[in-house]
Length: 252
Ligand code: PGA
Image 1 (cartoon, rainbow, N blue to C red):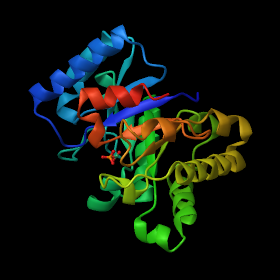
Image 2: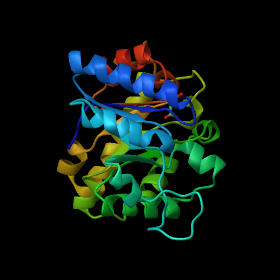
Image 3: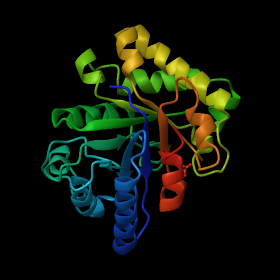
Image 4: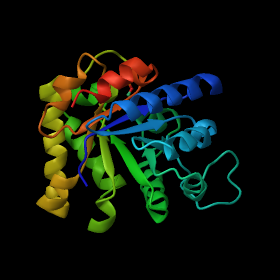
C-alpha cells in the first residue's frame, strides 16, 4: 500500500544510551503529535530489541534493520537472518543501500536473495537504488536504476512486489549536502513508477511507496515531498537528531 513514510537510517552511529534517548524522545513526541505519515527508525542491529520494545508501546513508531543475511541460517559468522529479525518483531529492513553495494561489494543477486528471505518472514524490504555521480554525468542514470530494479526486484511476482518499499538514493547526494533538485527527484521517481507499471501494471505502480534519500533535511524535505511521485524520505544524517527528524516527519 502506498504511504507517506519517513525512515531514519542511523547507520553505524550512537552509543546505546544515545540511541535509547533518541527513540524515547521520538516515541514521546509522536504520541502527542501524530504525524501524517508513517515513521520508521533503522538503528544498528544491537539496538533493535530496545527500539522494538519502544515501538510496541507506540502507535506511530516502526523499526527497521539496516541489513540482513542472504542465507536462512547456519555457519555465517557475524550475520543476522530474517528469522532473527522477525523474532524481535522487526517488520522492515533496508536492502542494497549504496554503502553496502560499494563497501561490502553486495551484488544484485545477493540483494535479490535478501529480498526473498525477508519476504519469507513478511518483513518489508526498503530496497535502495541510485546512480553514482559519474553515471549521471555520462547520462546513464536511468539505465543504472533500471538495471538495479530489474536485477534486484523484478523476479518477484505481483503479490510479493506489493510488499516492497523503494528508496531512490542518488549516491552523489548521500552524506554530501548536495541534494537532488525537486525536479531531478520527481523525474527519477516518475521513471521508476513507469517501469513498475510496465512490469506489474498501473494499480501496483500507483500503490508503490517510493522514498527519496540523499541529504534530505528539515529545510528541503517539504519541497521534495511535495512532488507527485515522492512519497517520503530515507534520511541519514538528519535522522540522528530528534528535532531535525521530527521536522522532516512533519513535512507532508
Ligand atoms: P544522508 O543519507 O541523509 O546522510 O545523505 C541518506 C542515506 O544514506 O540513506
